[in-house]
Image 1 (cartoon, rainbow, N blue to C red):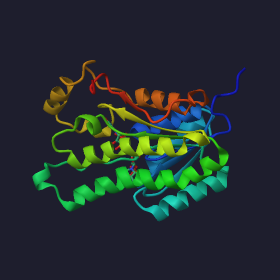
Image 2 (image 1 turned 90 degrees about the vertical axis):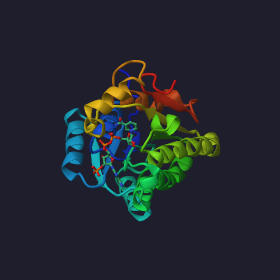
Image 3 (image 1 turned 60 degrees about the horizontal axis):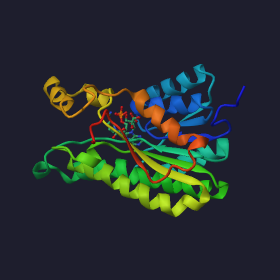
Length: 250
Ligand code: NAP
């Protein structure tokens, strides 16, 4: 039997206590990677992700850190590297929303979203890329959003944070390409998670008219694409923004 594709590799998935991050963590573990499950506040939910991976025969470690704090990020990466030597695959998934029309948007709502979604991506990537360069192998995968491409009323902060990740992806892909490190962004559309559950039915009906496929996606749809990009067979795929959104960004 062939060894699992990511056997011997280590992954760090931020915001893996629930939603898309949990599905990505489980997927990478199923592909043979050891997975560090980052979370900020949800200890019990992170433990559920770790248990799910262990129950399937995988290896996982819960690592608490607020990705918007560079010191906590450095400590987290040091902890994972101490346990497993290196971080070969980074999935920058942790993200928040704090919606409001621009004219009423507070500095705090703007800064909080930028700090987690954009600065968090920067801090986590910077903390792992040196090791990837040394090992001459790496996968950096960001979770953006269709909203970073199309924009959305009430989400200037969120759209800006996710659009910035696209520029970050392309610039870094060029910087590290010769070291065998790929950098890509997956941009989900509306995916059935806690974030989408809280929308009013009226909002859901309106959003549905924007989706050619006529339904929301599942967390596994995103996990599948992340697994594809992380695969050892995807070494020539870099600098790309891949929409998994039922056609919403067309
Ligand atoms: P979710 O269910 O709300 O989960 C968010 C995760 O991020 C949680 O594990 C949370 O951990 C973590 N997190 C939040 N702030 C953090 C911080 N400062 N430091 C570390 N972890 C933090 O989110 P989701 O809907 O699965 O979304 C995941 C990603 O996909 C986000 O980047 C989101 O923007 C993007 N996305 C989602 C959709 C969608 O339809 N759901 C669509 C497009 C893009 P704690 O609970 O422990 O704080």
